[in-house]
Length: 398
Image 1 (cartoon, rainbow, N blue to C red):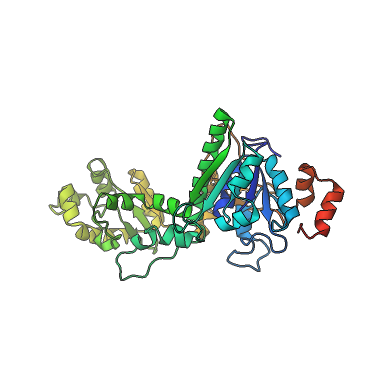
Image 2 (image 1 turned 180 degrees about the vertical axis):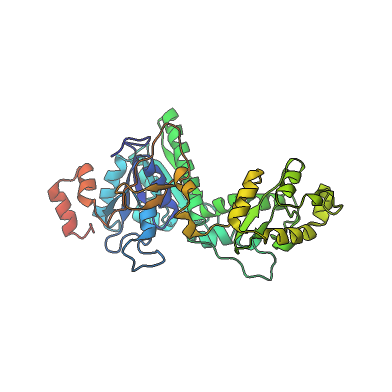
């Protein structure tokens, strides 16, 4: 295994779907040895959940379970739980998002595991937190992160429009980053005190954090309007526009005092700086709809490629409304380290969203098959070949 920051750190990924396992994936990107616990048979329910289940590659699984080793073991069986306890004794981090009642039934709660290993970081992830009437309630990012926290409602222009559906993992992956942060913070505390302990995060908390600007506004008693349509924005210079080749981009020109004249000159409409409707900040806000109409007609005259060159030339902040297909040929995605090649050289994957100077991430390895590493993981925990055979004979191993 490539030496990296977390080389030697042993992580038990006893979670399913996305957020909990993705936090373990980020640890693995920096060299942690992550053991993926799966039920025998079909394995983690996240397997085969891609847009095309019949495809030869399990896309989502390769993303969220890269670098990991799979142990397929029946935790409902007493011998399976005994094996888990033996693994816990030598682990640094335990990650789970099992519902709280399930953890109690399986003997996997903090009160069961922390006494086995005082240095263990028990990373708990839930839908709605661990206190309150809904603590045991199940949820996904679409229900707890996106819908419950007001995000789904706030991105539409008014109450009459249908709420927008989230993309798969859109809340899970940011939430995984929150759980990763909790784990690393606890590891830092362990370095200072020698003690592990419980850390928690949830879809609800992360969704609320994502919508914190709107929520904090309401907490101070102010009304929070829906996102206006592009024709009704209060600032025409922070809006999205369509080009002649039917592409969209969004502009964010907020330093108007310094940039406005250069921008207007670059788009060939320098006379607008002296137009009384647009000459001052207050006038531009009052006449934002009219300015949107003017800019609509301007940006419709050239293709996106030309406007990118023009706007970059005067330092205007903007972003194209990209298409997923374009990611494949976007050099910046690779040059920035956002996309990295698999260790076998076959294709790319999405890397953990941060870098540490002087610390290399490992080259991502392919995600494991169900139970691919049963024997090796159990042997490292002290099981003999005969004992492993007995577990297999009992149906404990997949």
